[in-house]
Amino acid sequence: MNHAQLTALGRALRLLGEHGEALTVDTPDARLHEVRADLRRALDLLDESVGAGAPSTRCPEHPQGPVDESAPDLCLLCETRRRAHRRSEYGSRPNVAEPVRSAPSRYGVRGDRPQPQQRWLPELWNGQEWQLCGTPRRDRQEAEAYLAAQRRGSRPAMAYRLVHEFTDYEVLRVWGTPVRTDIEPMGNL
Image 1 (tube, helix red, strand yellow):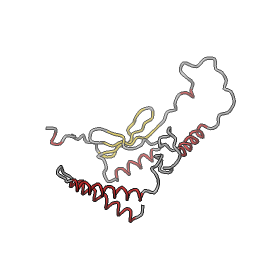
Image 2 (cartoon, rainbow, N blue to C red):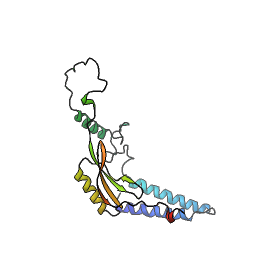
Image 3 (cartoon, rainbow, N blue to C red):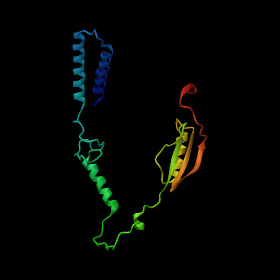
Image 4 (cartoon, one colour):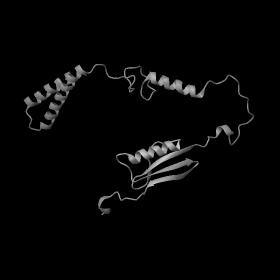
């Protein structure tokens, strides 16, 4: 869409907005025909300015690409790339047959149990309780840098804290003072 088309379309849409504000129960039919003509003019301008057909996928990289109904963004090209990446994470399986065990263990084997994971959870005080304010991080310095950026932001919270999660939760550091605030104005009268 070039600048002239954009200007003409904006003017036509503003005119339609003015028509909408002026509509009443007593609007005469001649005025309604004028609104219809302006509406058709705006639609024609929109048809001229749209270059391609409607996108077949929700993918910003391939809007006209082939469709895969099972993909979250309907894009076959991106879904193929994602599937190849998932396959490469598993690696190639060797063709060696696994030895047959006599009986499976009631409690499982060591490889079946998940490994403990540690994460750092950035939280903010919303006036009532602590809530998660960002993605849990695997790196403590990254989580502290994120909270520092939040504190310097345009709308910082009253308090922030960093919680270490490793089989249990441990509060590592608190910035600010959490004060419980009443959400009702005038003290809940």
